[in-house]
Amino acid sequence: MSNLKTVLVLCTGNSCRSQMGEAILNHDLAGLVRGISAGTSPQPKVADGAIAALKQAGLPTDGLIPKTVEVVMHEDIDLVVSVCDNARESCPVFPRPVKRIHVGFHDPHGEPLESFVAVRDDIRARLVPAVRAALGL
Image 1: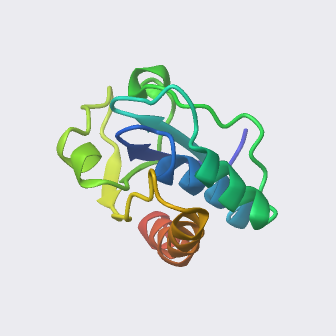
Image 2 (image 1 turned 30 degrees about the vertical axis):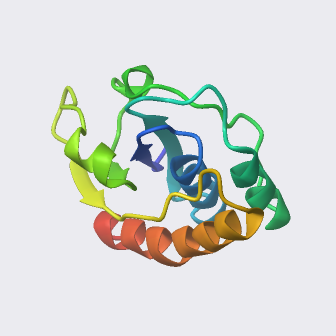
């Protein structure tokens, strides 16, 4: 039986912020948290800038693919973190009560790599402590 807490990072497109959040949580809170991500309206692929920013920081990117929130709806989720205002407003109702928090981040889609790196660093600086606090870790 695992003591890992499952954290769903929810965004609209599941192509950038939520994917970086998933990778960062799985790395920085390894052994405590299992990060997953999904989108309310997923894009066809993870943004190249998000992948490059993660790789630049030495973070794994294997298995990162956009998926719809319906795919993870029946996971045993302990915390939902919306990372964009649209996902916060359209966050679906889960089959059982789930704690929710919102930690918004700039959307670097279509911007240069430096923007993705800045968002990656912001996610690391604010999302990780917010998840720790919300789950009492």
